[in-house]
Image 1 (spheres, rainbow, N blue to C red):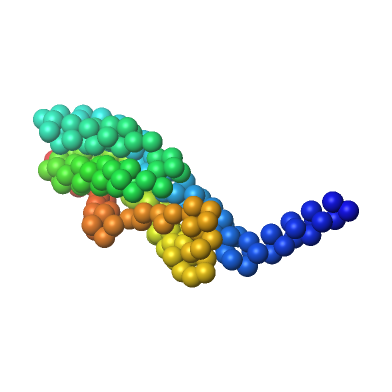
Image 2: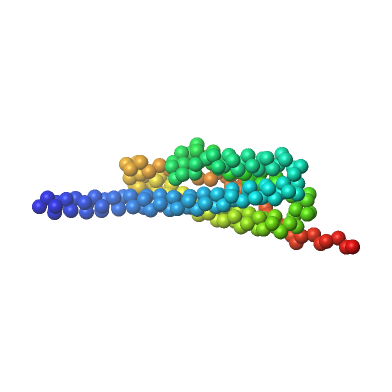
Length: 204
């Protein structure tokens, strides 16, 4: 008898939760976590390219110490921030993560501007391979960010709208921070990796 009553209660609870948006909150929250993991993976992919990129440039333009140091320090700042899923519930930590990634983007942009002064570097096979990898990674970052932004928008709508906002308050589902307009501009403008064919060898 008790088991039967318990089953009825569980069915009623499940019915109430599914009708009040609990399942939607759970599924959209999981989409955010999956999207965030991809964003972090692509940012890490870019960060992993930096040491080889800096060393390659240093081989041709060792005198550009300030720019090279700027890239290295920006990468170190990115690495000092733990991009865990818990970070998504802390707007301040999220903003620091985005600021660090923006600084790395800016530092890479300055490095690529410097590279324009060194034709021999631009024609180096190893450097061109790194540039191809960086360009591909930047494209992946943009796609991953767009998917994450959409996932957060969908989730935040569910958290805010009635009646699911009542369920969100009951189970402590909080609105999650998203990328800011300022950060979107920084990412969309940096770094541009567009190198043409290597310069022709001088005639002898």
